[in-house]
Image (cartoon, rainbow, N blue to C red):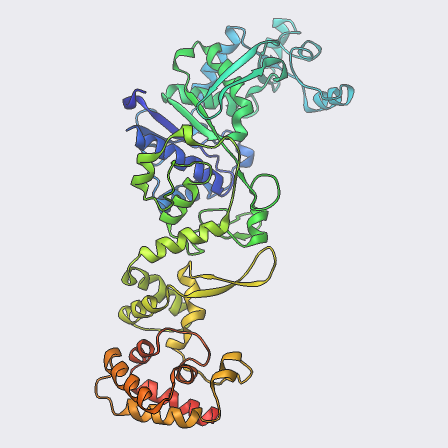
Length: 520
């Protein structure tokens, strides 16, 4: 493979938020380009003006910035093969439409929507192809002067690609091998519409890939049926020698059941399917995003990379540099990859644990502020360090039962650590932990413990531990669970000496006095 000429592209349509499946496609393009020292192009395919959604293009660009997927040229990045937005390339496409009309590879069709619907009613499974085109109103069945007259009158028309039946078309796919499709199953696709003077995806895509010297087209499996048409188009233009290599990626499938991953799956099971939160400008509906849900971009990249591709090792935690080094399209799966969103939680936890307490303190401070708590970065970092390896409860999206998992997000910390900042105001005597550990003599034992702590001039962890462990051994009192009730109010939290040192002597004694007076 000539590594100096590798050029790939990611070409979304600005019709809404970027689906996580599209993110994975872009990621594989990025890994492939970086692996081979090539370039990645960002192209906007906006030929269907009726589906344009304001803000979608900006959303897509912001998503890749957050994820760290970098482009070398394209919309917003510059380059010498632009413009990179298809709506700005009308004149370029029209020239190539004329080439196809002149060499007989395409023809003009005037059939109205009503005429096409009537034909569908007449013929079951109607397809505009070699078997039906001579029954329709097009330049193959009409005199040239009539065609020219209709165009001069402003009659709307489309240009269709003329596909000859009975030919086996070979698509060389880097993932699926030699894919053969007979041309008889293909219809005469519309390539150009006079109504808006814009090409359809099929023509614009081919012309752009050729002029932008794209060497590899890496895209989703859903585009595989269009690959034979694209092969024929390259041949019609005489571009066989510059046709890119194809690689059609496996679909992302539902976590449960059959079919491809959809937004409904995420809504039902409680996980995002978009990289960033999306505010629909038409309906006002808000859809969750990975960024706003607390995922780390490195974790999302690692998680997505392994959905449909296997590096051939047991290692799962892979940095972006390691992913680039190991990436090989031929190790992509041919079958779809189930979207295991709980594995995404696991990845996020692993990357969260790699962060220092100081790095996590800033998002934790934001979380605290949202709950009305103000503290210092040092104290926030101290709490994160004590609590980030704890277990949190969550509602399972499938069973709707309360289950437990390790902390995977900074937001998981708040219900586990509110007691660091808010003292217990009451005690639930029906709580299993309180019922079991606050016994008849607990108030007296806590008074003795309070007196021991009161005598300490230094209140750090080691000083407390030395004094209280010695006192507990001498008296036979095991104070830790009752002490936890005093400081926390329930059976959770870090090591008691760590907690008391964080709270400080004055707050620790105050909480103990309140518990003694309340619980008795």
